[in-house]
Length: 386
Ligand SMILES: Nc1ncnc2c1ncn2[C@@H]1O[C@H](COP(=O)(O)OP(=O)(O)OP(=O)(O)O)[C@@H](O)[C@H]1O
Ligand SMILES: [Mg+2]
Image (cartoon, rainbow, N blue to C red; front, side, top):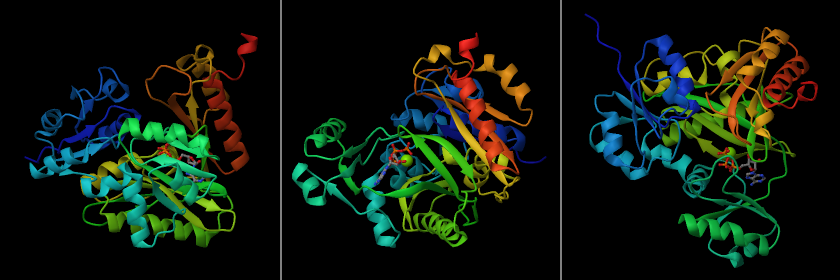
């Protein structure tokens, strides 16, 4: 009799957990989900589920019971609860000591400075006088709880600082000031690392944000100096090793106009800038995340094609005109090589509901195909004729 496969608990029912379910099926790995509400994205595809609050320790204990490992769809589980689960003897991956660097931008900045990792100039600010002393214009960020550009403000004057300070006070978190980086573009270096220390680095990609939300990713980053690409991968591997990250680590970077890379922030879970790997790499970031947290040998991060372009599908300002399943006949007929990933979410303005991947030998062609498809699902094309 062979041993049954270990059950993996996933905290959070968003699209990242949903997309972990695909390689879990292929590898025969049972998942148990903690969903924040019935019917959320991952709850639609993972039958073994509990609906509850990830801020409640008893709920976390119930979900973890009998599971080999606990991992995450998001970074919001309180650090103290993760320590409590570890004290119960549960393998939490990534562990709280590592995860805090993805949860708290102040802690992350302090640690990266100690490691000598290049970052934008930054300081914790307690009031407007501190911001003026730091230098305006600058970027203000809440140290915790931000996502998709929420919790990030570009400030030019003392008056601009009122809103960020009010938001930080209301949330009970600190405010971090950063120099306004004059970047050429944003890059992302994605690695997976297992508890035994095996690591795999994906090619460095270029990402574009719209209104603070990841919009488009090109893999690999076009015209990136190979030395700088190697340097970015080394930074990501070094951070993963030094912080003891287990699972996927995404290092968001700025490529400066004078040819350096600076670390923007860290994510310790599959990341939007790694969605291209589902179709464009030998092993997807979701599969390598599962392999890593279970301490299984990692799969190859090598690309399958010269180029892969990922474009997110977001609800437009008038979500009513968008189409998701309705958009299939045109999108699939127009481009038989297109890969579509929908998250089982309703279209709402600004909400990420899916993405498309297009890969091939010609970058312009991949860009056109992926952009066309994403615009079509969003409802930006063709409604005038309907
Ligand atoms: N110091 C900076 N200088 C210039 N632009 C910045 C700076 N910091 C952040 N930005 C811009 O704001 C975006 C969001 O910032 P950041 O990644 O810190 O926030 P977030 O809300 O945690 O993002 P995410 O959606 O990745 O969780 C960045 O992708 C970048 O475009
Ligand atoms: Mg970010």
